[in-house]
Length: 516
Image (cartoon, rainbow, N blue to C red; front, side, top):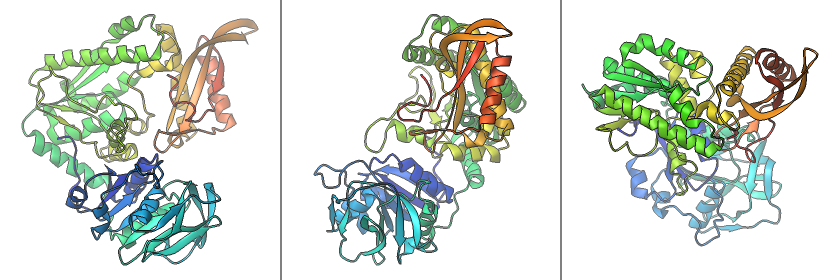
């Protein structure tokens, strides 16, 4: 069971033409309580039709629709009597497929533009003058037969069009981004007024659907779960416990690279639920011995990944009676590991085949259709503690990649204690949910300071906090100065061997979110 498909309900198919915003479009649709699934642009029309979609969206994309080898969808998609909305490249594709003309304009548009709105189903109850986010090098010069213009900007005469008879629509701008303030309203008009969706995609109903599906799949067999303490695996553990009770065994591997009190928090939440079926493996010495003297970040990752698999394999074989393996794979893992354009953005340990020598008969991934924000909402539905549901994401290699250079017990103590202070202050200031990710880094840089009228020569801690919709791009968070001041003073005063704190104000790109 590689996914928990939704029960029969409205579904919007998003054909991905390589846009960086494809996941964001799908999330906006899900947030409007309509299920959305991303498929490759070249998915056959018959496959799409078999899903009985309420509507179809063509995403944007980096290609030029004028190029001979530009991505094209099956032409029959436009003949399925299903509403279609083209966004940016998607609008241009509809134009050329139906006999219109797309050109390179004299004045290109990037960024915010004033949108003058006319009559159109997409724009009901939208202001006549609003802001839209433009990002295009081509635009529609001649619409296909049967279309009319619905909106324009100063440099784009056809910023939106529609053919109500065929129920085909297009917008040159990006309604999914926050820079288009009425973009959600435009998308909702498409979903509800044009596609006739009912809005039945909610985590409360999904929880029951998933639990019943797990019961049916597992029957009287056993399930093994690798529990990391992160929100994904914690939600999977809660779903499985609700579904199969004592048939679940969860393995928590302490590799010695965890955040402060992480192991204790996991045990406090899941020991009462799972009892002896929660197996905690203390492998910290084993991991730290393997990492001794290693500074290269990729080498650290490979060592940790290989060793984790070995520890988990050994523990799994010692449990015996293995039937199913459960994983916390979520939708972005699947999309990123094999994107619709055939390009792997990054590999995820949850996506792929089972280890050859573990005799599982199948894999259970109940979160596979969900985005991270939906997983958090599901965690709340299942009654998990708020601090577990909303804790910032934590990479598999743990603190090893938040220490620049080699790993020592002293360095682990420093980054643990500083990170714990940061998390406390973010929570106390009410800013925890405004940041998508936040943590501290032990930079490896040592500098001169003065502490207690004495010269010090100690480490520098960097603080990183970012906001992002998809983790592919991110902006540094503008934390209030008084909050930064308190974080800095507490770290320097309470964490031994630190005399300097700096704040990372670099966005992604050019930087990554993590430092290693």
